[in-house]
Image (cartoon, rainbow, N blue to C red; front, side, top):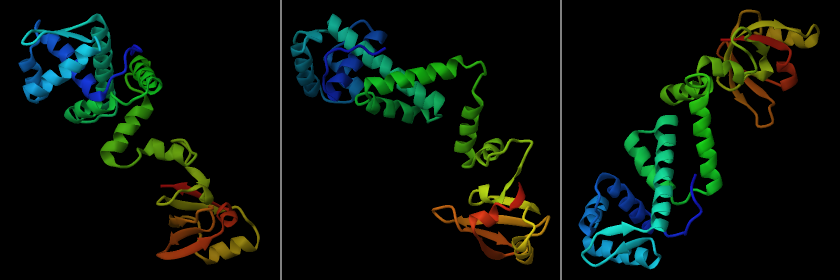
Length: 241
């Protein structure tokens, strides 16, 4: 959990977190170590250290070692943990390239609210403690990212079906969906009209366009575009392909 400690600028946070990271690898931190780690010049480091010292986050004498105060340790540790969890979310959960996830986590960590970050933590915990190795919907998301389309099981649910039942009303289909006509439920004039337009059992059709309010629906059938009102499309029962 991120502690509610002294608020400082993103630049100062970067330096503070970097001191903490370097100290995990070696006991002492000098100006040259920090400059090398952040790829900046030593004079820039000295100026930032002065500001951190003024805020009682570090102890540093000229040409001496850089030490974190207890307040500095608390702040730096919170920043580091935040960075690690954000990188984990981006790389392990969303599947972002590790190098990009590292860079983005470094940027995001400075501006993410406490509430949003805590929700990210809960989301990660949920994924890691799910009874399944990975939730079905998460695997479906990975499929979507890789193939740029929904997996078959998602498509079925999106259309209001399950994997065993692909029978729906024509009016329920989405743009781009292909289907096979099974029957027309109307027994009057509308049925005769639809049959005359080619809506016969076994015929394949495709939804080309749907008006913003859901009607009319542009259906491609036998290389011909047919415009149906929604109430007409509701009378056509199809099997999604």
